Length: 319
Image 1: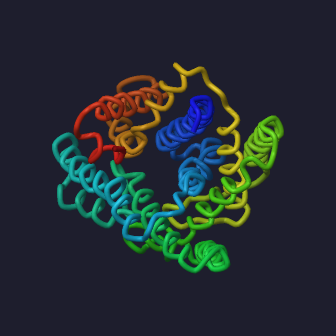
Image 2 (image 1 turned 90 degrees about the horizontal axis):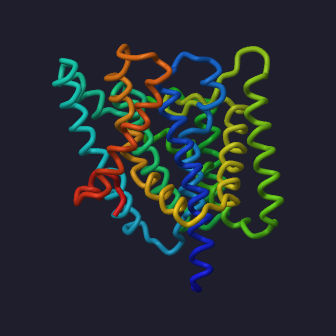
Image 3 (image 1 turned 90 degrees about the vertical axis):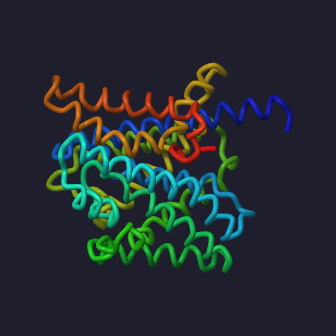
């Protein structure tokens, strides 16, 4: 690969990293304002599902199931377990929470996990969805897409029941369609001009946001964690996530900003697991609008610092 090709790809990845950082901020804001209807409408349906689409977009074709198990075990399950233990201890020491009740919430995880384990369901769901996709690949796309569609239908009709399975393993079946959508998006990349992708993606993202913000009556967004998969909200989520990823591929940054954005996006795992603790610690001590901002900055800063240490692999999942 020529130097120019590497530079262009680096810039395009920086655009994806910007989208990833925006999703992380949306996760923090959503957890800081859990009962705000407008925040729920605008952020809930895409902020975590987009990471499933990104997983599909960057899918590595040659990997075997054993290789996938090893890679995802190291990048997801190892830091998941370590942070679970650390947050259990923190809840016990800082808030006098009963350690056994806290440990139970962590061990069951999935829909059972509440503060400070709000987003822990995502890591086990992603692990299960990735391994399932890798297994289905053995039978070709003729099998993968129908199974993904069936998994989505199962969650549309019985999502809360599936969410009661620990670690969100059953809920992962509803995430398969998002991984497949990311793979489809990657396969189509290069088929359209950059300008057309930019205009279409931007228009679609804005259109989706305006639609869900202004649609009359009650709007139930997609809530994977608890198995809420409303058909319309799920469709909007898929369109929104694919459009945001497409938008990210059109964003160019100067080299110095590209490196900075990539560096900030690396400790995504840390931001996802630690921001609830920051929200708890900061609430009531300042004007509340500052809480999500400082929680995001605090978790991100700590993540960047951890990424510079020898513990980065086991705490961030990034080698």
